[in-house]
Image (tube, rainbow, N blue to C red; front, side, top):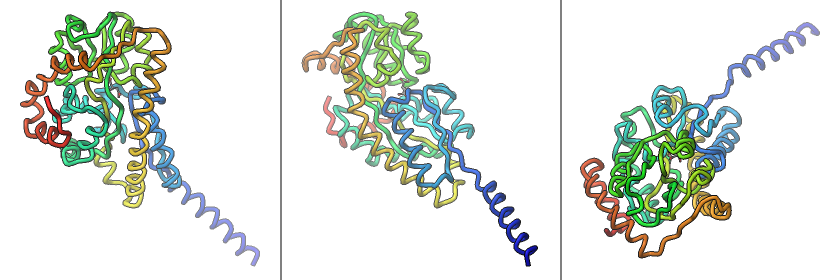
Amino acid sequence: MKRSVLFLLLATVFFLTTSMAAAEPIIIKFSHVVAVDTPKGQAAEFFKKIAEERTKGAVKVEVYPNSQLYKDKEEMEALQMGSVQMLAPSLAKFGPLGVKEFELFDLPFIFDNYEELHKVTTGPVGKKLLDKLQVKGIIGLAYWDNGFKVMSANKTIKLPADMKGLKMRIQSSKVLDAQMRALGAIPQVMAFSEVYQALQTGVVDGTENPPSNLYTQKMYEVQKCVTLTDHGYLGYAVLVNKKFWEGLPADIRTTLEGAMRDATVFANKIAKDKNDEDMATVKASGKCEVISLTPEERAQWKAALVKVHDEMASRIGKDIIEEVYKETGFKK
Ligand code: LMR
């Protein structure tokens, strides 16, 4: 009798340890290039928290911020190869992947505010764009907001004419290239992780970014002037490796989809406040001149840049641009 109890005990211990070993968590490596304390950085942490809680530890999300793991271009390749499972690249970085329609988000002055932008990201155009990623082995799960861009440089830039001849760092988007050329500036594509140093050493004269990036990367400390142009939008698409995602157990995938929906609500709720707060901190620092524009001055930027829409119509697709105009009520 005693022996059989002991046997039962041993068998139970054996069963428990082997089943625990079998339940290794599924790892999601989530790589991104910005600081933790940004809208994207915070949303990635939030997703990690709720995804791990709701799957009761069956999924572990490892977030790698600040280009720790990969820089801009490499991270797309790493996702396709399955070296990471999740990314949230800026919508301005899909051209090199061959999905250039995403560059419509870079068109200067196409959105006046977040409400207009959301009409597109939550509407048919937003879905159509994400669907285009499937053939690249990628699934687009969501759009996450960042914000509207300011222009910065190592000299005072108030009006479009002040941009003439400046070397400006841009993301890898042909629309942004055309935008800088329309201002008479010289665009230079560069990975995000290299921008601070390039500004500091004078490799480039200036850049454009939402305040959250300008502040957390300390770019404002190595620029003379920041002008609140709000001339364009910068936001993200959250991507997963298709093979990985479709290979997940169905219940886990459903739980993660729910977590992503909630993380998206969170991301889009904090983005504007974070950018406003960071701009206020930059202003208060006194480290650079911060220029606000009158409506008339901002109209001059729009007049100089709106021609980029027609110039880029053949690249992005005239129809898709028209669809966006209809959704947002855009007027030239
Ligand atoms: C940039 O390269 O300027 C941005 O895409 C960085 C980011 O992810 O916000």
